[in-house]
Amino acid sequence: MLIIPAIDLQSGGAVRLLRGAFDAATQYGDPDEALDRFVTAGAAWVHIVDLDGAKAGEPCQHDLIARLAQTGGVRIQSGGGVRTRAHVEALLAAGVSRVVVGSVAARRPLEVRDWLAEFGADRVCVALDVRRRAGGWEVAADGWTSAGAAKLEAALDAFPPGVLRHALVTDISRDGALSGSNVSLMTELVSMRSDIAFQASGGVATLSDITAQREAGAAALIVGRALYEQRFTLEDALAL
Image 1 (cartoon, rainbow, N blue to C red):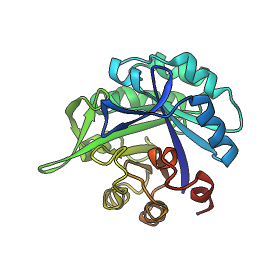
Image 2 (cartoon, one colour):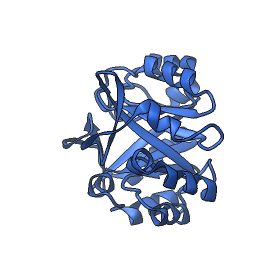
Image 3 (spheres, rainbow, N blue to C red):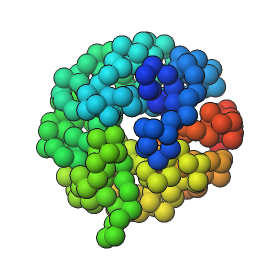
């Protein structure tokens, strides 16, 4: 299982939100310094999110992401506000190894399937940010400001086996809360779609969360606030 440290960008700085609330951001300084720390610790991948882009519905920090992608020694997975083919192409051209597509994947999956076919299934990751509602998991959109974009099962069904390789699923209720990772959700996902390499996100607080997600079958785990708050080191996480 890959451990992927996260850098969320807001107005050029590194931040973490609490449960997706844009007015509940904790500042963590210079994203270049954060990336350097992660590279030095041995990360193979880093997850970078353009929060301003996610809110605006179009990329807002392309130049900063492009600069970070040129750092070297690590592969970048990035998204936030990606809504069109041109957005995907621009990020890949800037040096991003894998583009994360969220809202449009839930609303216009046929379009995203075309991008997967054109750019390759290893270069596009579908992000499904979910909230628990009566009757199951509901996918949120537009930087988590819009609910009801799709049901989780329907969102996955829109990508038949053989089409989608990477999917990032975030439990919004736990994101940035250091409340523990949702292992049961990952178990459900792996049982539902064993053909997809699922990335878990939201709530990681301890090294035991990492072990539990690995045992549940997660292909990767996104880790953010726990690293910035020094709950454990990235070196210790990678050593697991």
